[in-house]
Image 1: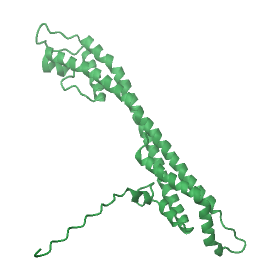
Image 2 (image 1 turned 180 degrees about the vertical axis):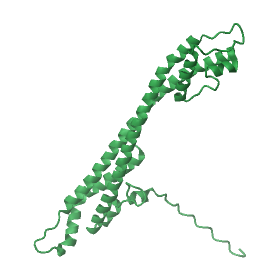
Image 3 (image 1 turned 90 degrees about the vertical axis):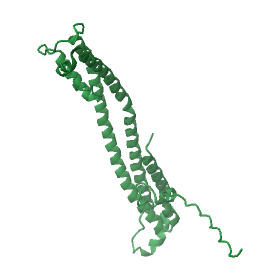
Length: 264
């Protein structure tokens, strides 16, 4: 779905361009009537109608480019959901293994065991930090030179190799999902930059073109049409008429009751 900023600009541009295309000959006729007395011998009246139509087409082309850039960005935003869901699911699986493993280590060896296996802090929730934590824990579990303290209970055992394998098995999926999300972020930034560039160009084109067309309408004696297409001074890509239409209408105030007559 196109963003409102773009649809509003598209609406304004279409209205101004259509008015210019429709009334180009009328503008040319009105301007010719004003300028004909100023022509010198051998001079010809410029092709004003073609100029007006070219300006209108430039408006339409730059706005169409903005709409296309906005559409591309919206499609890119829609593509973000699946990679993020995959990342979150992979992170949840890895975190579950780490939480359970931490509980087992704590029960068997207490704080000293947690420190040795790099599990002394709370298991993180951030997916990127989870990967780092998981890799560190796997490294500690597989370090043959790392000796754990004596278990609190003789019956409590920890299969270090099995826990390391279980954590390691969840790491590739999360790494892949994180890489995909990072790619989507870069693509989203690229489409956003393209949209912003197209919007700046469209706003400049509209401001210049609509002002020129409004001046042409005015010069040709078509002030009513000029008023409808004059660019807003506050809202880029919009007409002043639309800006006025958006202003809240003040409700008429009720007349205050007349004061009672004295002695009545």
